[in-house]
Image (cartoon, rainbow, N blue to C red; front, side):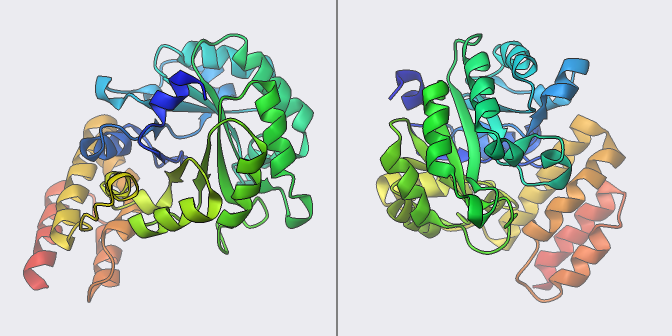
Length: 319
């Protein structure tokens, strides 16, 4: 294993990249709990970054290390140029070859690259040639169940120069439905020599441990499980590395983190934009108690931070 990669993934836990989700604020919240997990940015379009370099999407703090910056695209030299630019921010560059969203795969990006392994390999080779930091790829089991080419694809990415793999245990056709097939990931692990992280349906310390057992992976990448619970990656680290089971945050704690989350997005984006940006997170923070659905419906319509805070404070009073 590359020693640089070994250091970056030593916690055995990473934050999976999610477009419009794993932004500077969420990464900072996760880092408040875990000082060692591998953070990953949201997907950065190489086309967009080529046009506009000064963007909030690249923002990071000193303590965000270790952090991987994820690029999407299908033009090898363009991706390589963007990776070279991002090298001043990143500890690792990740190439997205797994995004299943229609507008991404229609542009030959994301999981569409699994149908063109020669192009995917050329992207890795071209990018690897210009950067001095590790390079990883993230992909799925295949485009459809009839095209389960993840083992051959992973081998080809390794041969092209990839140092690390994250694999989502679903096909592109599944999107985010059904169950992630952790046991299939073990097939990839047996057939490559570089580290493999398993992704998909890891939502608790217990599911992380089961995923590692089934997949034989070197670690887990946590995506949607971290929404509404920035402490999850730290709790998973403690459980899989030390056998220590820490309690999940209480409703009161979640409410305080939600207020902090909204406030920081306001500081980053402006008050109204920040409030609207956070509406997508509210269902993850507020669930599992009487009246939760009604309260969520009210909160996503509010545009005043003080009113939002007052409504959130009243939740605990009324429980």
